[in-house]
Image 1: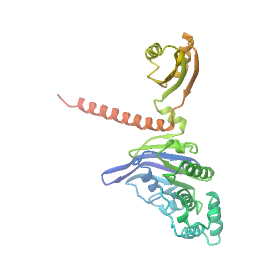
Image 2 (image 1 turned 90 degrees about the vertical axis):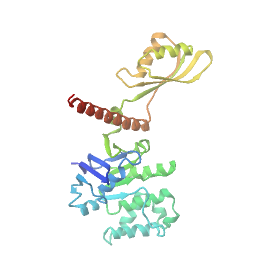
Image 3 (image 1 turned 180 degrees about the vertical axis):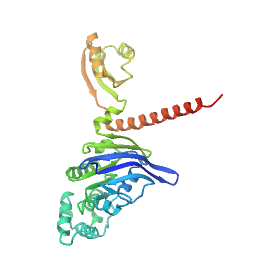
Image 4 (image 1 turned 45 degrees about the vertical axis):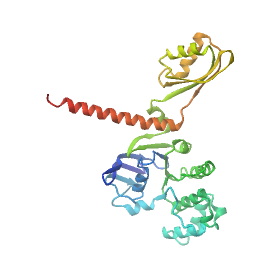
Length: 335
């Protein structure tokens, strides 16, 4: 049974719909990347999961508890880290976490043990006596994550937890989150698919309040009309080579990287993925003509390119559906 389940979940701010009829199922123990541009509805969805915001309509169950009638039980199974950790900078790390543990109702006999455990999980033990105000942004966020872990929640909601991090801080935070895999169900929101791909089991892709798709990285790749790229170094006069390649339906674009001595050409070929495959077509093209080559390599598209294609494909689908609807309405009008 899913640990998080929504049906027709919606939220409006005035007349603006920010989350639109979401149907989501998330299994226990999964790390899920919630991906979307700024304004896609990610933070609003997470805030509804925490019970901070109440949906306009729809069903939402968290760990079997109903968001409307059992909100207090939902809050006990949720740990939440916002984009900027809400901490008291004038307190020391351990002092602050003990304070938070008492607020969360941790038994006074277990406070020290609980705080030591979350500091260990977040690699904060060497900083237990440091003032939070003296910590870097990365370590301040770790204090916020340790706070979210107090009380042993089943679910962690991390809302853009690495926003503004430098590459080293980002890598360290990802390592901390990766250590938590399996012990918690984690939803990690980000506008950068590349950033979180290594630790996520599956992804929810949102745009303008709508769920574009849900699935593993491989399933996302299959959903888009993916562009293939082939890096090729081949010996043949450039203009003749371009003409031969342009006559093929397989090649959609040719990028000249370098034209070298003795008619050696370094080029990048682009084409849409199909049953033949651009790399296989290039191999056959070369064998049939006997042209010498020094390099033939397929380059996988970046994850950010996949994300952009998913968004564009959804917009194209929406536009096509709207046009069909308009055409249908027009056809019903009597002359």
